[in-house]
Image (tube, rainbow, N blue to C red; front, top):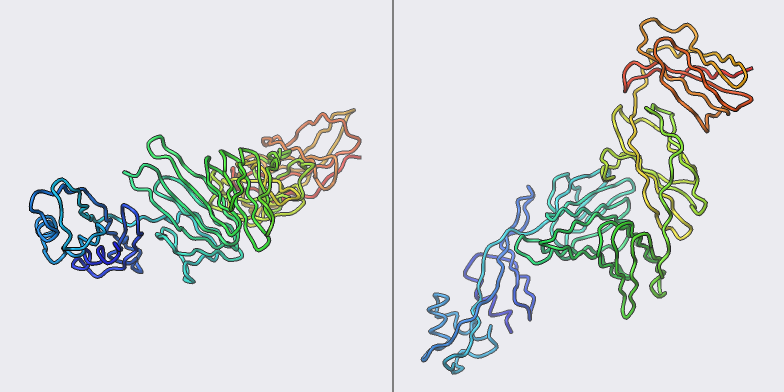
Length: 443
């Protein structure tokens, strides 16, 4: 047995916790654990090299020369599957264990919001996450882990997951990452490089997903597993079953049933109204997808969609700006089909403006001649930088049209409509506006 032999070789180093894989070329022994201040731990990585026996060699003489300690002879023999008294023949190969100190690998928390814990304790941004540490998100918890390879894993609310394999050192032939998830939702952005391809895998109680591409979603609960691929490919495997999912396909596997076959994902929704700027109460609209059961919309501060400010779902085809601070954001919308599979994402940049409550809302009036409607701001302020006029054929502004005008405060709309509704607000700067004034309607 090599376990005792390796233990003996390492015993004279420092106190340590052994994690030994029998029957492999290398084993790992951790020389220290992660401290509360997230100081990186180190490992002793054991490998082996060949020693060619010379005439007269014994395990005792080899241990003295190669390891510097004759007392390690029994363990050297055991490491080679022999006893210390075994006669060695000239030219025979004896394996000499080697060790070297390396930095223990980890993932870094690059985004965190809401309740996120590690082993039951609150987690901080920039924390280091090591193998076998379980992360859990609460009802409104989001967290993103960045690996050295550039790959990112995002955990959605009510998710539990942990890293079970991580081997992405610069000299490794591939970057091996394996995540175990028993419940919740995860999304990924897996990076590949020509010199070090990614071997990325997510394991669940129902199946294992091996990633050949980059972007996919996984959801797992007590009833089953669903997975959708929006870039690259994923191979599902369970027992003697296998299903390949290419870009644009997903699969749903129910408890006790065979692996689900490929299902086409919904296309990205198409926006029908994106305002030049959006203040509290304003809406961004998209066209309905005929096969969508509902929609998932999230507002993020980054283009990649990781830094989530707010997220929600429903059957409505709009997103209403709430209490977000003035600034630039990204709205990400996805349709969800009857199988619960998320479709492709439609992303757009939006500018959120703050409403200055000290500004008096402006009134508008509408006059028309044929199919031309003139919308004017009543009593415009002389020093006003400009106005935004919004018109619609319905009083709820479900299909609005907006234009920005200067201090002349009037705009002409040529529309095929029997009736027109209009409202306006003052523009102070790109991110400061007044509230909309009362709605005017044509006669």
